[in-house]
Amino acid sequence: MQRTFTLTVTENQLYELNDAANEVITRMLRDGQDEAEIKLRALPELWGAFKAISMALLGTTDTPGIREIEPRVLAEIARPTLKRKKQ
Image (cartoon, rainbow, N blue to C red; front, top):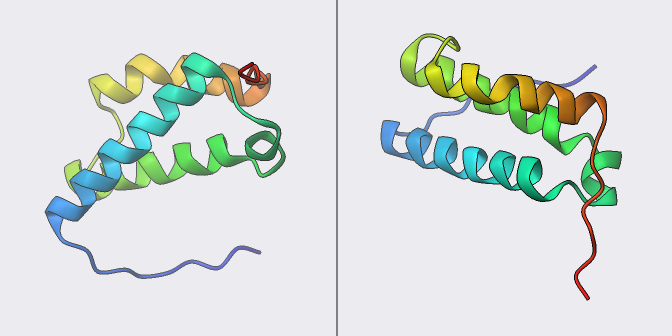
């Protein structure tokens, strides 16, 4: 069972967290995930947090941005792409 927490942050902090999560999700979709990210299920966890932030900020997860990338995120979660190592 996972623990949950109540956290107090400002609206600006939530927007910054939202932007940061979006950047990491976009990077994972573009470049793939490294072995540790796949093992730790980082993308599914981050996707859940991203949607929770959207709910806190907007009162919904039915946004154009989420609708646009959700199929790609779900596909990447189902079949992770291993990030190529830079040479």
